[in-house]
Amino acid sequence: MQENTITLSDSTLTVEPRGLDKLWSFRNRLEIPLAHVKGATFDPGMEHEPKGWRGPGLRLPGKLAGTFHAEGERQFWNVSGSDRTVVIELDSSEHFTRLIISADDPRGIVDTINQAVHG
Image (cartoon, rainbow, N blue to C red; front, side):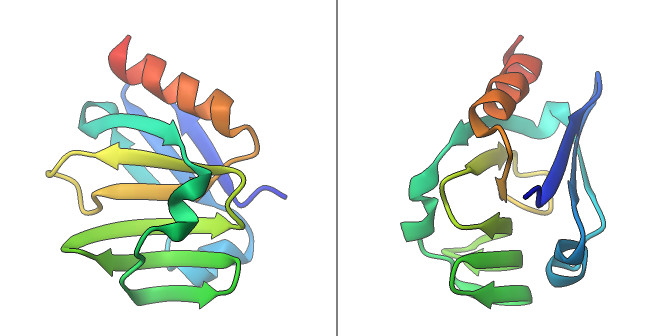
């Protein structure tokens, strides 16, 4: 099941939550200039990282959607389970420090993002 649509243009990374995830995450889409993307990793272990406090968003067992504030960082989560988790690191000029999202082909999207960012 696709929770997010991830697209890249020459200059922008776009993450669009799908279906009810738009409602739960309080976001229709996130558009990040590629110049502000540090890189991406496939990281199923993120489920064990501190999430901090939720606001606004949804936190249920196996489902996180929305803004979470942990250790002084503002992170966007839209993840169901953890086996397809992609972490996208952003620079300090962005609203979020990280985007943690589920992707249908996590390794493929990580490679595509890193290729676009690092050439």
